[in-house]
Amino acid sequence: MQKTTKIILGIDPGTIVMGYGLIAIEKNKVSLLALDVLKPGNVKDSYKKLQLIFNTVSGLITKFQPTDFAIEAPFFGKNVQSMLKLGRAQGVCIAAAMRHGLDVTEYSPKKVKQAITGNGNADKEQVMKMLQTLLSFTHTTKQFDATDALAVALCHFYQTQNSLLKKSGNLKDWNDFIKKNPKRIVGKKS
Image (cartoon, rainbow, N blue to C red; front, side, top):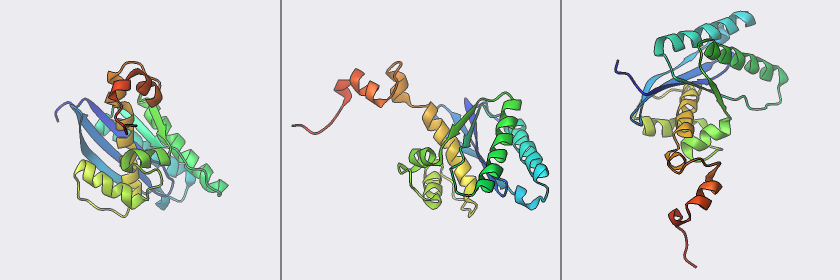
């Protein structure tokens, strides 16, 4: 395999279904490496589930040698038990990444949807269809956990590769960019 500049592992954590997606970036061209789910929900013992999640993430890191690790942050639900289980799943994923020396970046579901579709309230099917367009794959799945994980990886790429901000020097945000580049603003003439 040719050496790529960057490989990003994205994770959508879960104790019932955990999604993962890997993308490779070479010369700012993004390609799909892997997209799948792990179903720890079939394991009865809750600690064995966590061990399976940890071992799977570790195995993905060993196999694909990612340079970046991104994970979806849990959304706040009403069911406290579900939140605790999801937090544990996320924790073991993060521990596996850190065990392999990877920095961890976390993105909210709304941020991921916004980065992929332009709409922070997009549904899972819209995210999947946009990913198919952006990454040129035709595999359809009803396991949206896999495409959600892929979206996390691509969101991470977009967040770390914002070339307009990088080319313009050390900027804090878009408002800072506008202040430092007034001639680049195109708008309505008064």
